Image 1 (cartoon, rainbow, N blue to C red):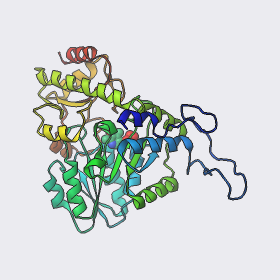
Image 2 (cartoon, rainbow, N blue to C red):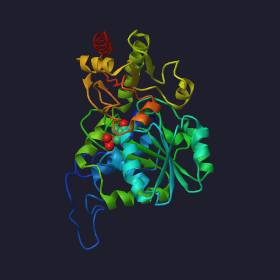
Image 3 (tube, rainbow, N blue to C red):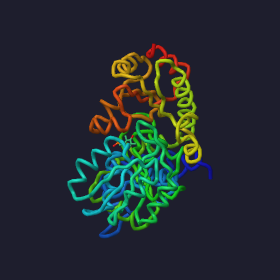
Image 4 (cartoon, protein in one colour):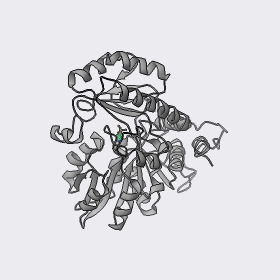
Length: 377
Ligand SMILES: *Cc1c(COP(=O)(O)O)cnc(C)c1O
């Protein structure tokens, strides 16, 4: 079956009680039991909820995974995955990971005896060199936020499996439509559904998809044990969002390419970060690994003042954190999404004060380009 057919039908069987074509929002905390130990498979809504189950089936199918778990946020999904390692274990992490992921690892989980090393995973030899006898997990994000560096998922999976470590990929930037990490050997896929999967900037959520039976059992145990579950209403919203994922991503990709080409030609722009540009150092790898290049584009304006002019000069684009919605959002990584990354590390990564990030929406492209052009001049 094709991607859109799966997106529209997986988990979306007509409701068994009423035939409702759209999965109902089962807004309940508990379920009546017929007798002692006799129930319909639903006991308490932290543990099981039919709306959430439908979404879990849906996104697992989109990722080509056997198991899926929906969480209250992308961060709680990542946190649950990190519950697969224990005190004394070592984790290798991409050095340009989402700011909140870096904060979770370095400021919270490091307090519990988990050891993290940050390397540039774009070069697989850096990953290889970072392995220790206690390395249990490799956590990558590709393309990275906001510098758009691409990591070779197959190469990282091969080297990690040779060392007996699981590979986790945060697939938020590409979405299940543009990139399917499991096909490249990745063990666990994490999403912030807040972004492209929901796609309408009206819900916070996270997802974990994986194939391994034992790891899946543990993630399910953690989901119920800690309770950072996605609510029935948010599950409904994301389920509604994924039905149009393919058409939305095609539109984001088309507009993303147009914005990147426009900026690359613009005299006020010093540099554009977008894997779809032939000038991107990993353009060939991105072409091989992704079905498109998506709607995330970053560019260097040269200074904080120039960045400020663009960020405050736009009229159609909205100055806001987040990404992946139908509307174009523009942001300043150094003071917004990556404010918690230490200044010297930001410098190493290229997250300068002049860097601007755009999550290109699916408005008419002429209007987006006109707005950027007036803000830049
Ligand atoms: C937003 C984001 C997260 C965190 O997700 P929340 O839903 O905000 O908790 C993680 N990774 C990436 C790449 C993100 O963009």
